[in-house]
Length: 137
Image 1: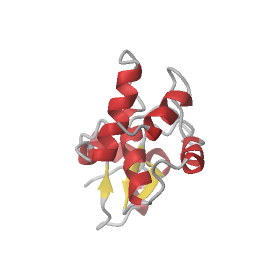
Image 2 (image 1 turned 90 degrees about the vertical axis):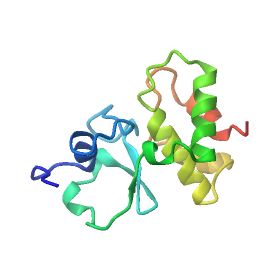
Image 3 (image 1 turned 135 degrees about the vertical axis):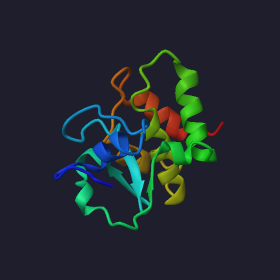
């Protein structure tokens, strides 16, 4: 890859790899729309300098996780609640749901509150994200 000096992981994912699920929704990481997994860690790709990502790192975006039971369930619940949203945060929601499941935190309200502290749905606030992450159906 020929990432520009100082490029973020988000910039490289979107511009060079065509990843669309990790979105640019803010300039300071406060929205969480750019969340991806890097070697299993939940990160905000807009805050990660691409130069600091190891060459052999496994980077997973929603496109990689969409078929996962946890990601699909959360996104389905979110969309069912009100399908007319902008969906800027949907990819990050799926990634977050998968991370919660992999780390044994799925369904735990305290863990969900912690992870939602770094995310927001611009359309409705965090209530819909919370309900989607708690969804069992």
